[in-house]
Length: 118
Image (spheres, rainbow, N blue to C red):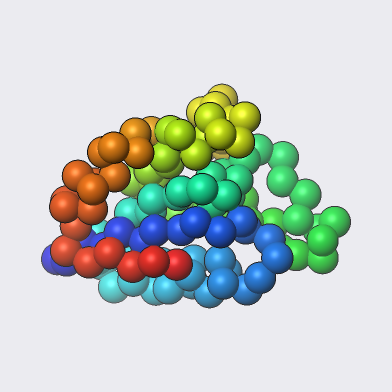
């Protein structure tokens, strides 16, 4: 089994890129691959509680994230500095995530066979 790390950096709303990446994440996991996510920069907003994407005419991304466990996607990493820079903490997130310091991101990369930027 190969391990895949999907790295996301863009906000959840405003383009179809995030939805397309999440589709690839779910497809990869459906083929019994080890899949994890790393959320950097504005992507940390993907996990924010009480999203209201419908105001923008978009699908609520939090529902997709809550379904990840069904696909055995259990490792979701968030960059600690990205949270802090955006005034967020782990208490603001809709699900548990492992905080990674910016200086340790390269170490996380080294734990995976494939790294894909979404």
